[in-house]
Length: 166
Length: 294
Image 1: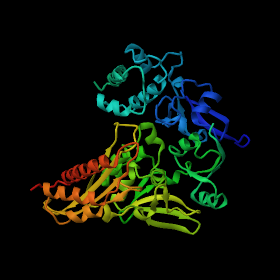
Image 2: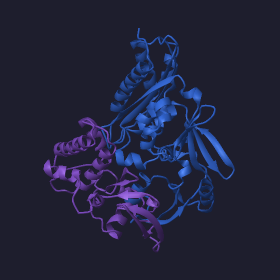
Image 3: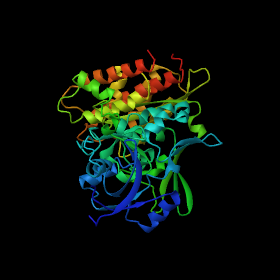
Image 4: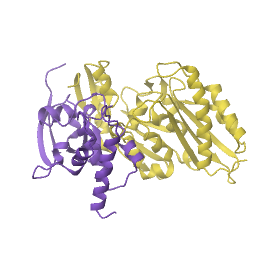
């Protein structure tokens, strides 16, 4: 590996404009964890299969372990840390995961939360089968998925009700 | 940190072509969902890369004046599935793209990468080949158009010259107008899997919907590259829409395929499912085209 090669990139991270000098060889998950301390971004498989590193880039789900950090230049990145409100309260999806016991070891949880956040932002009503398909890029080796689907469905129903769709 | 020697970032197509000529040793990286994994595994450790990912002009689907569908090579699988032009004219291509990996991969991976890495299991490749897609390559002397069947030279080998990048995939109006298609991915899991075999069929029926005017079929993982089975196509042209025609189609397909035994499946098993895929895909394509069965 050759000497360090840095590039300055500007992007929006959890709602704030940031500018940073990043090694061009870093993955997005490397940068978020090591340079910004956002350790909700988990490194599970590091080959884009487990979904533990899922973040939103311009509102869409991305596996940050197989995406170069330099590619978020000019884009909008959201991690679980960006879901808390100004008073530090956790989001409705996070609370639903707690209420439905959708967490055991917790390693996959931030990735699931971000995938769920993307789904709920669409404002669509998903069937349980559709939720399974949309969450198929996230793996959990503890829960058997049932409670995760329950939690996402619960948060979805609550948001839709609040938006006056029910 | 990836074991990359140097990354050259292209800001435009011209820039990419220049970098291709200046850095002949470098590998093109689009979305990177295959390449970064190879680098991590050590297969490409220490490589030089030309990143074309930030060239936004290569994203999106548009319709040319003559009705040609133009798919920018950096269009992601997810963007392809959601695109209005694709949904209206070749919905099967959007459906095939929706079978790739999982949601996170479908936002990262590109249709250009899916074809340029020359892999037989690529979910969009069989449908593109079944629609006689044209690959647009841009090099130092301008654009070059290559039919997708000629673009594939062998396993992991494509007709991409040292000064070129792939800039678009085209589907001509005569290739899609009046056709309805269906893609079936046979894999061990419903998501996050590579096809054991895949099959894309499309069909054009007569006005009374009782006769097959034209049928095209392309397999993934029936050989080292995506494979059209012309014996099947010729066997059913002009035949009535019937169970017997579907059987003739499957029999024709099995004359041409040549799958191998790999750790994913044996040759015998692949042959079995390939016959069944031809039946199912033709049947579903006919139904989508409003076929009247006799």
